[in-house]
Length: 162
Image 1 (tube, rainbow, N blue to C red):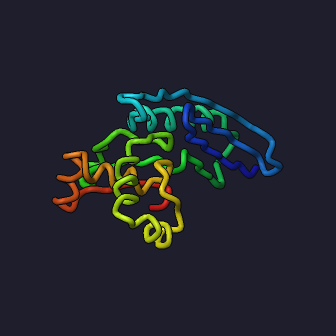
Image 2 (cartoon, rainbow, N blue to C red):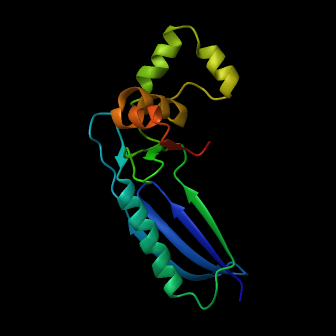
């Protein structure tokens, strides 16, 4: 029997589902995961909580699998950003989610410097805090752990465009 595993790491929950070759559902699991709002406009998630939710949902589904999984697909909340330390693999930041607006100050600076057209032309993306580049720039400018890891050549940043 062909088995396909789908994992949806969404905004508020992780869903895992196992399908047969006819795309009939064999097993499903769901784990909720909270959002935090430490300041107005900021939206974060704890990367350890997200990882645990993924592992638990997938484990539950795999316990019900009547055989070996042949393929797996992963979908996650696009435009969210996470920075981690390369050697240890430990997160340096919370996940800065797609809803987060903290990068607006950087986008405003680009606009005020008259460089918005250049950025849009080079990236093909509008200046909007939804997109991950502004979030990455904000972390590099404002988070000492990220800046220190970058200076040491040990930072890693993840976004859907990576």
